[in-house]
Structure formats: C-alpha cells, structure tokens
Length: 232
Image 1 (cartoon, rainbow, N blue to C red):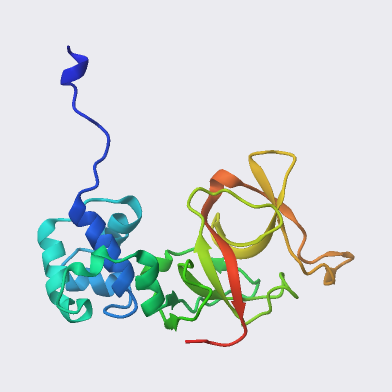
Image 2: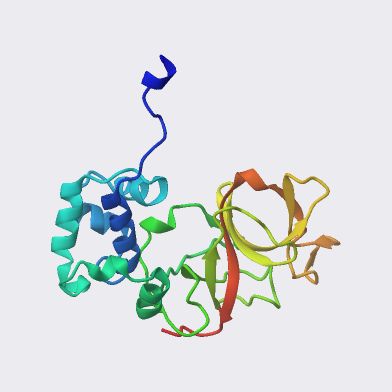
C-alpha cells in the first residue's frame, strides 16, 4: 500500500504547453524572429526559458500562453483552430526557417543554440514538407556533394537512428558540421567521412575521417534537399 501512495514522478506535459510548442513552430520567423525577442514579449527573464519549454517540454504558465496568443492573434487569423490542422500543412504554408550560420575559417562553427538565432527567410517549395529548417553549407570538406554556399533542407532525427552512407548535419562537441556517416566496428560510434578526398596537407588527407560517439551527438539532421540559390 505504501508504494501506491508514492507520487507519480513521470513528467506530464500539459495541453497548453503542447499548444504553445505547435504555435511557436508555426509563427517563428513570421511573428517573431528568435527566442530573445519572444522572451521579451512574454516577460520571461531570458531566451533560455523559451528553449526549456520547446526542447525540454518544461510546462508553460497558462497566463503566458494567453499573452502569447493575444500578442500574435493577427498571425493566427483570429481563431484558435490553427492548432487542429496537420503540422505538415502549417509548415508547407509558411515554409521552413533559414538560418545564415557563419562558419569559422576551419569550416566548422562553434556551437550555439540555433533556436536563439534569427532566421533570415523562409524556404518553401514542394519536396521539403517534412523538413524542419535550412542551413547554408560552409567549407569544402563535403565537395562535390555539398558546395560551399549552397543551402540544404534538413530533417531532425530525434531517435538518432543513422542510415550508414547518408549525409547529415551534426552538432557534436563544440562544433557543427556536415559529414557522411559510415558504420563503425564499434556499435556505439559512427565514422564521420568527408567526400573531399583530393585535398592533401603534408601528404595526408586534409579532411581525414574520424570516429564520433553517437551519444555525444547533440543534434542529428538528415540532408534531404540541396539548393544552389535562396529559393524563398
């Protein structure tokens, strides 16, 4: 009987939190540009409060949701039925956000939360309905498959199930990069392979393959589509 009296420690995500997350994904880049701007509008102390709700499913104060819906009511068409429509349809109407991440000279970018970055536009055309966002390609490590300066549409892989041989955008350690992920003899690792095998430094590959522990990958996104120009 004592066990039955113990409180349930399973976290419950309330309906208003799920509604906020849906509306957030719909209006980001249209009604507000980044988490810092939204945090100020909703009187949160910092942008990290928004990130906690979106990423960690931290429950939102119902009053905050009310303020959010009132402030951006013009983008909701004056109705609350927006949340009842399929997510794919909403994404297709507004497209996916594009983030112009600036790389370092070495071709990788020091990690920061992309949800705290400002989108520079929307990418919207048939074939990317299931994608979540778009990023540019920097550097030459994945040439000729990915050329420096082109844009790619990315789909977040939440379960980290990797299809060996496919090209992914990964956030790993303190860096972000594009790599073709290959199977490793160690089931807990993958091999990060660069398609550019022609550039050499002191007789060695400039972009040599290296192992990455799967559990150390912070974000895994499959490259779904590649575009030379800003199609938005």
